[in-house]
Image (cartoon, rainbow, N blue to C red):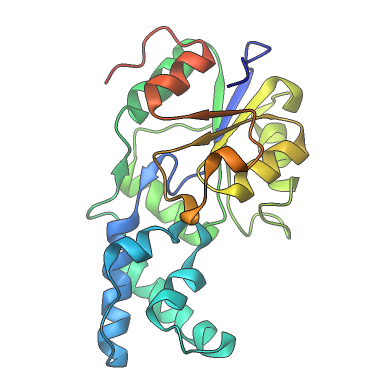
Length: 226
């Protein structure tokens, strides 16, 4: 693991699979769509693995014989079902709340950069995490570009008033690492997320951490225990 070469001004995170575990609520929506379409829902573990790639990837697991047009036709219904009940099981991963408090106590800013559509991000955060106060929230449609393009990460840094060269980007997907690296941030891949079936050690991140305590130690936080 590469040591953090600076005291961070800002720490930016992917949302689903990094800060929050939303897979159960997304899977519940997929089960509804499968039932409506008269097919058996795939096992949860197969769906969880691809959550970070979004609705089309999850629907692709459930409907492997559907072409792109067929998958796209199901997306609006899937998102509508999810939006109607998106916070029943969603919560921060173990230790995340305490880490965010510790980041604030250390006078660092933190933010979110997600490929989740803005209408879902804006609805979910107040329901699932009303106590969170990020300095920036950039969704998948905030800009014309999405991760792995670096533009959303750079935009989050600008909104939060942080120098990218003195900031950190944390994620559970290779696209997070690609976006953070291209934006010039120190990148951290986390092993606790969905990972898209990939190996975080192969993504080119500056650091790979097993748990939130390890991330807190890398960031130089004094107290991260939940």
